Image (tube, rainbow, N blue to C red; front, side, top):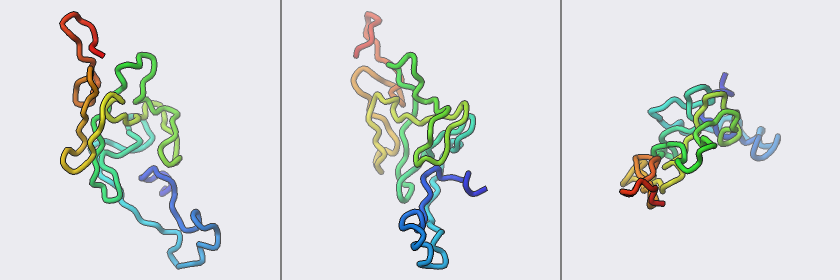
Length: 143
């Protein structure tokens, strides 16, 4: 049961780090505690779940930017995490699993304390997740 629990990061135990002799160092040597950050979306490896939580960092104070598919890749959907190994190698996304793609790979994400999870789009892109081309008056993308 706990093997499928979040976070999806790699197992951290003294035994994993130091080998079998690390296990003998304390009665709770196999227990390493960490934060499980909040998220407004479902996190996991199943249909409709994202592989990463909304908030992250050692104290969960950082927030991911809006996510979208890269508008310049017509054939590839970067948000499709079907059969993609989760960060930390803790499992593989099932059909319909969602990869989080900050700013659609078309902007910079500010995860800091002043602008939690806000995209600054590259020239020629717009939208909360930089998911749209900006089009000039002639109907041509301004890339």
